[in-house]
Structures are given as C-alpha cells and as structure tokens.
Image (tube, rainbow, N blue to C red):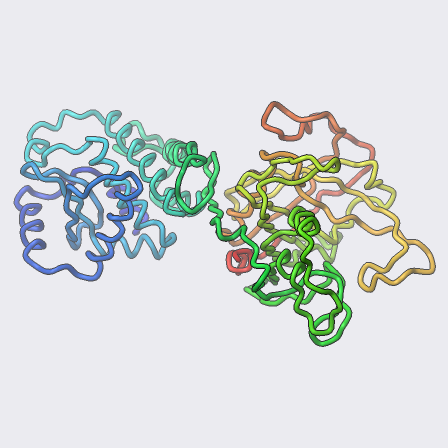
Length: 490
C-alpha cells in the first residue's frame, strides 16, 4: 500500500489534491509552533545539501502531517518544502537511511532548477504538459544524485530508493518518468559529482563514474611509531606461540553467514608486536619504501560458504572478498613500473572463488584457460566475471604446507577480473556494492573462451571466441549475503 502511495505522490512539485486554504492553514499553523525533533533533523539535512552546492537557505522547511508526501512549492512569493514526517520514516524503513536525504535533495532540486510556480497561480493556469513535468522530475533526480553521492551515499543505496518509487510502466500519461529513465538520470548525477574530484580540496579522494566509495586521506597514512593492532597476516609466531601461515589465519568476527578478518598489514610488518617473534623494527628507508609497494595499509578479507543447487555440484565452494587500501595510488608491475589500475583511488577489490572443482582435472591452469562466470543478486542485478580456471600440481599440503610423498593436482582459486584494468576494478567495486545491499547471490560458470585481447578501449575482455576444449557443467551456486555489509566494511 505504501509503495502505491509513493509512486503516486512522491516528488511532486504542487499537490493539486489540497485546497489553497488547506495549504495556507498548514503553513501558518506549523510556523506558529517551535520545531519538533524531525523538523530539526530535516533542517540539518537541508544544511548539508546546500553546503554541497554552496547555496544559501532561501526557502523554508515546513513539517506537514498526513499529506503522505514531500513537495516543493512557492506560496505568495516565498519558497517552501513541505514534508510528512511519518511518510519519510516509512520510506526509510523500506529502503535505507539515505532515502530521506535523497527525497529532500530532490525537492531542493526543483527549487534550484526553477521548476516551482506560485501555488495560487498554478491552480488557475495549469498549462504545463506531462512531458515537461517528467523532464523536470529527471532534472531533480540528477541533482539529488549529485548531492547525496557527494555526501557519501552509495549508488546501490540510491538505486534502492528509486526502485521503491518507480516502475517501468508506460509513463506517457504520468507526471513521473519510468524507472529506467530515472535511474539514468541518477547515473548522470553521479558522473557529474566525480568528474572534477581531482581538483577537490576536501579531505577525501573519489573518482569518475557513479562510484561513491570515498578514500579518506588518513586511511593511506601508516602509523609506524604506534601501529594499529589487529590480525597480523605475516608468517611467524602468534601471541600464543603457535605457528601461523598466511592465508590460514583465524577469522576474528562473524556476521550472519560471513566471517571476516581485518588488519593493518604494512605498519604491523614494519613494527611487529608478537612477543614470541624475533623480528626487529625496520628502519632502513629503502626497505620501508619497498614494503609500501608490497603490503596494503589496510586489509579486509570476508568469506562465506556457498551451496550447489545440484547434488552434483562442488561441495566446498567459498566466495571471498578482499579490499586492500594502499599507501600509493599505483601498483608496481613485474618490471617495477607504476601501474594505476585503481578505480577507487588507493583501493583494490579482489573477488575470489575457492573450492570449485567442476572443471576436469586435466584442465590446465597455467596455459591459461579463460572462462566467464555469470552472477545474479536478488533476481535483479546481474553481471559477468572473467577468470582463469583449471588444476595445477603441488608437492605440498595446502593446509599444513608440509611436503607430500607424491605430487597431487588441486583446483586453482579463481580470481575474478583480477587486476589488469581500471574498468575491471570498476566492475568488482560495483559487485561489492551490490553484495553489501543484497540478500542472495547466485553464481554459475558461463563459457570457456580463447584469449582475444580486450574489447574496445575501456579494458574489458573480448570473450567472443568461445572454446569447447573441455566440457564443464553449469551448476548454480547460492550464497547467503546476510551480514556481508558489516563483514566487508572496515
């Protein structure tokens, strides 16, 4: 019921269901009382919105109960934004905490773009076409997306709000555009928000595109003198005197079906703290410089087990997400050359699938054998990864790292869209954002393909040359995303 109200009423500029007297009464009545908590919060949010664009507050916020709406209107020469507090709270409960800010920014956008006409005049001369109204709604959406992205909302969070209030029904006879048109306007807002980020004087880095991940400058500054403690991922001895191997560490926290560990790799390597260890603090500036290109300042690793929807699928698949925050905004390639493939400045996103044994054991990993994997999140968002698949020979036990009497073949971990280009990092970032906001992930092998370079200038793989060298079944794997947002966030 609420969704229907939202679709019909949200984001209008003038509500013609109200009488002139009713609107005036609401304004006069509400102005005669001191501000409630919700009005105070709304004014604080308005201040944040206006600070983004450097505008002064030359219109008034008026709480107006029982209108099931938020609207921008001009009345007797003054500009107002009316909002129903209960309506705003209901929207937030159905979406996320950024919904209120987006709705308010949308209404501010109507004022900033000069969409609103005086209520008294509009009720007499309603000569605006539906097409013009839809155009104004898209302009307000674009403005709101620009503002909230600057304030820190993710694309997925804004998309969640649009999903609630819009549909893809024919909008020819509607004052509001279809979902596809509104989401396109939102994307334009995000593009504009970060197109000039490199010249920003703020204490954060961002990027082009509709990414809203922000890297605070303080995140990349290691504290060698007073390192932050956490799970130490290096080889050596733990605090209780036990031997530890990288990649086989105890996970420190559990959120829903997810396990996570978080560490400050670089500073804890330079200034180790294990009382059982023998390493000394590194002071050689050349060694420190080298380690700064080898170890992230911050490291997050979160994983969850999946299940095959077929009884013949792999039994021990795990999905792992790694986010590495680096001191430098580049990586060094094999020839020690700087390579900037980060989509979010200083941050690297890795997606890894382990325990997948559906390919034949004779499939070579080092050849390499290229493959696509397709994913769907909540039946709505979909995409594709590229990886190498196959098996390789090892002489060591993967858990204990002890030598084996005879070599065995083991499946390789599948690194999706691994490094390579900024475009592929963008795809991984967007996947992580969807993951954090989703409930269920479904993953399935797509095709094998022969290497054929990259498709276009963006840096995506050309997967058109399909390979039939090996027969691989397409089993679907399901992953529960409960707790993923907390597990992945540092």
